[in-house]
Length: 466
Ligand code: ARG
Image (cartoon, rainbow, N blue to C red; front, side, top):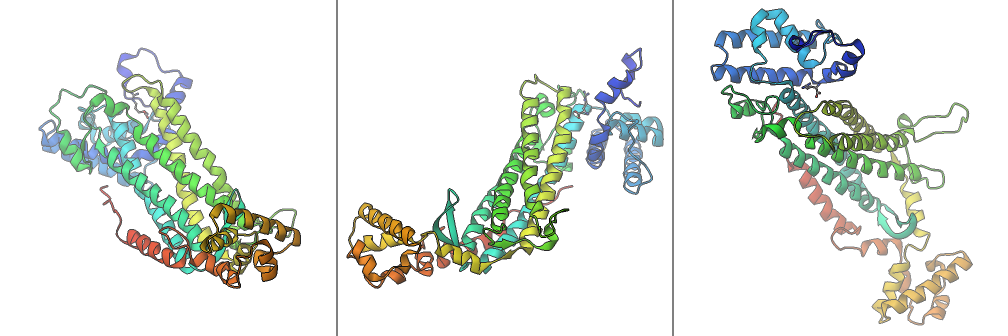
C-alpha cells in the first residue's frame, strides 16, 4: 500500500477501504498525461525560481526515464500504488532521491487529475473526430456513386415518395457533420488549464499559470480555482456528444438490418462483416450492426451515470468525481470501436440498386406526383388529393400501380388525365423534378455533394498540441 498522505494517520488503512478508494486499476490509462502535466509543472516551477535549474533537470530526467521504462515495458504500473499520481511520484523519488519530493510543490492531486482528464479528453475528441471524418469520406463516396440510384423514401416505415440512395445517405452525412461540430465546440470550450488551482484555493507560490497553460497547448488558465478542480462539464459534454454519435450510428444500423433482411434485400453485408448461426446453416446475420445498436445503451448509460454523480456535489472537489473515469474510458473506447467497424461495414456493403428501384416503383410512391399533375392542370390540390386517393383504392383492388391503368380507366376517375400522365409519374420524373435545395433530384444532389466535398477538404483541423 503506497500512499502519499500517511503523516496524519496513526493506523494503517483497512485493506478493504484501501482497495475501495484506490483508482490505479483504471487511472493508469492517464499515465502519459500525468507525466506530461508534471513536466510542464516542473518547467514552470524552475522558471519562477521555485526550483533550481539543477533540481528541474534532475526531476525531468527522472520523469522521462519513467515514461521510457513504462513505454518499453521495463516498468509495470502495479496495483501497489493508490493511483497513477502516487505511482509516478513514488517511482521518481526512488530514482532520484529527495529532490523528487519537490515535484508536488504548489500542486494538489485535485488540479492534477483535473488536468490529466482534460488532456485525455482533448486528445480523444480529436481521435473520435478523425474517425467520424473517415466515415464521412466513405459516405460521400457512396453518395457520389448513387445520385441516380432510386429507392423508396419512407415515413412511418411506409413507402412515401421516391428518393435516391445518395439522398438517403446524405441525411446521415448531415448528422455526422453536426457531430463533428459538437466535438469542435467541446474542444474549444474545455481547452483551459486547471493546473495551479491547487486543492481548491490556488497556492501561495508565485506560479505562472499562463505559462503552464501555454506549455500544454491550452488557451489559457481556468479563471476560478474552485471551479477548476470540480468542473466535469466537459466530461458530460463529451459523453453527450458521444451518445448522439451512437444514436446516429444506431439509427443507421437499424436501417441496414432492415435493408439486409430477406424481405427487403436492398443491401448485402459483406461476409467479412457478418456472422453465422451454430444451428441454422443458411444464416448470415448482421451481428455487427446489431452490436453497434446495442452498445448505444452503454454509452447513454455513461452519460446518465456522470450526470447523476455530479448533480448533488457541493464545491469543490469530492471523491465522487473519481467515478468519471471508468465510464468515460469505456464510452470513448466503445464509440471509437463502433465508428471504425461501422465504416468498414458500410464501405464493403453491396447496394442492390435494381431491388431498390423495383421497390420504389411499388407502394404508390408516385401518388403525390399524380396529384401534382392534376394541380398543374387547374385542379385545386385538396380535390386532386381526393381524386388520387380514389385512384389508389381502385389500384389496390386491382393489385396494380397507377401507371398500369389505361388512360380510359384514368379518365373515368378524372377527365383531366391525358397521355402525358405516364411520363409525369415515372420514377425518373418523380425524382428528377425534386430540385429544391436539399431535395433528391440529381442536379440538386450534385450541388450538395460539391458543398460536402469542399467541407471535407478544408474543414477545421486542430494541431495536436501534445
Ligand atoms: N483518484 C482521484 C480522482 O480520480 C484523484 C484525486 C484525489 N484527490 C483527493 N483529494 N483524494 O478523482
